[in-house]
Length: 156
Image 1 (tube, rainbow, N blue to C red):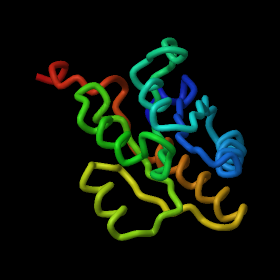
Image 2 (cartoon, helix red, strand yellow):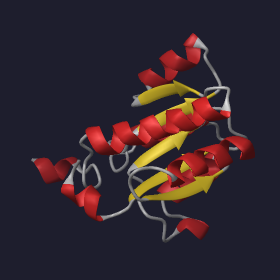
Image 3 (cartoon, rainbow, N blue to C red):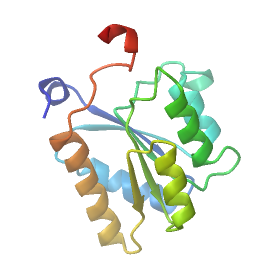
Image 4 (cartoon, one colour):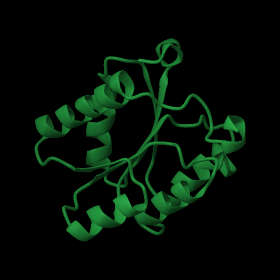
């Protein structure tokens, strides 16, 4: 794991409109092996405001990972994903789609929009909890993440 991530909390943005799913994810992330700073929003519009530090989110911390539900009121998760991956300052941010949909159309569409991972939400509490634990272990103990914004000019 990157030494910088060891020294600071891992910032996760959960975009989830189902309160029960949010509670399960919050509980699992709070029990993670690393210190997780979790922000939760319940609409796609709030997710974009958070990511662009607009309105009430003007002091938001840039997430190290976004957990994104697809089926959101208003601006849905598909649109949020497209905006993230089309923005030069956000496109390197890992986005894990965490949804109840097992539609091949949704799976293909999200990967075509450069989602980093697609997970169908498990049905039982224990399975959902374990999935979140494994997800955090993978993304923060195994995967090497960029330390800062994805500014291509920094690397030329």
